[in-house]
Image 1 (cartoon, rainbow over the protein chains, first blue to last red):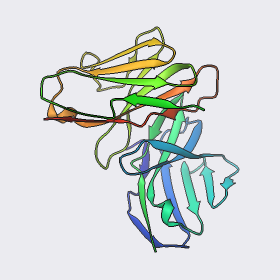
Image 2 (image 1 turned 90 degrees about the vertical axis):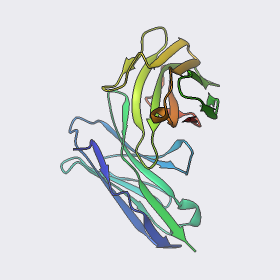
Image 3 (image 1 turned 30 degrees about the vertical axis):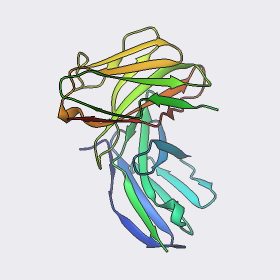
Image 4 (image 1 turned 90 degrees about the horizontal axis):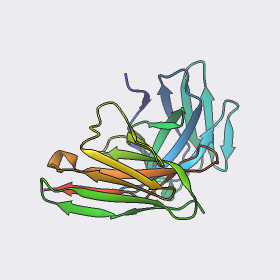
Amino acid sequence: RKEVEQDPGPFNVPEGATVAFNCTYSNSASQSFFWYRQDCRKEPKLLMSVYSSGNEDGRFTAQLNRASQYISLLIRDSKLSDSATYLCVESNTGKLIFGQGTTLQVKP
Amino acid sequence: GAVVSQHPSRVICKSGTSVKIECRSLDFQATTMFWYRQFPKKSLMLMATSNEGSKATYEQGVEKDKFLINHASLTLSTLTVTSAHPEDSSFYICSASPRGGLREQFFGPGTRLTVL
């Protein structure tokens, strides 16, 4: 079983749509969780950390359910510029473990 | 702040040659640097953790004699792919954690290696 599992997609949505990505992790001892964004042939960039209480940053909302070992990312009012691959990441002892990523394509 | 550079950004080489990739933290000191590899449509896989002044810690399945890591200063780590073969063709990305800071990692822009 992969340590971090994501649906690779692609998710094709129209501009303005709301889209949600899910991710599960296998290590119950994981301490920190993140969503990264990776554009084609580029390095990953931190989008946001994920906290148990849930957190929001503009159009992006992240949720963590430790009991179910499940993380989500909600993007509201999708923009063309949101098209990218979204990587679910867990961290334990300083190492980052990346999921395969979910590809989002926002169409005009 | 928190800029990490990699050099070269792209390299094409013949099978059997060795390739050195540099990772530099430009505006902070990095006690720890990480090396990742990413194959097409796959996730980033951690190869090794590099601590300044000590030997790197390699992940399971990564050959330490093939992927030589040197972290001689707080701003520079190098990865040398020795006797590269076509199956080593990949996107190599480094990241750095600031000294004394939070555990956030800042990523370099990556090096695309193609071995012919």
